[in-house]
Image 1 (cartoon, helix red, strand yellow):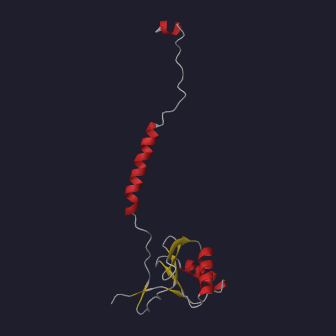
Image 2 (cartoon, rainbow, N blue to C red):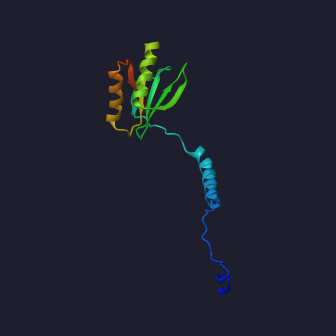
Image 3 (spheres, rainbow, N blue to C red):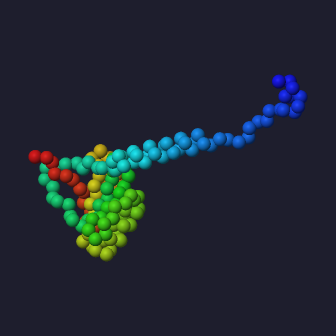
Length: 143
C-alpha cells in the first residue's frame, strides 16, 4: 500500500454523478402515473335534491362549481364547450354568449357540500355583468 502512494497513486475524488438510478426511478414513476391516471374519476358534483324541479334547458351555459371550489364551464348545444375556467372567464363567456343569443339561460350547478357563499359569489358577479336568466341546477328527490 505504501508502494502505491510513493508512485504518485493518490486517490482522486470522483467528480461526476451517476444519473442512471435517477432516470430509472423517474421512468417507474411515469409508468405508475400513466397507469393510474385513467382510473381517477373526474370531479363529479352531487347536486342537492328537491321535491319538485323542472328539467334543465337543453341549450344552456352551465357553470359547475365542484366540491373543492373549482369552476368548470360547459355549454351543450351548438358550441359543445367543456373546460375549466375562473370566475372572470365564466362571466365573460356568459355575457358574450347572451349578447349573441339573449334567451340563452345560465345555470349554476354546485356540489351540495360547497359553501353557499361561493355560489352567491358567482351569482353576484353574473348579476354585476348584467347576465340575465340565471338559475340553479338541482336534481329531483327520489320518490
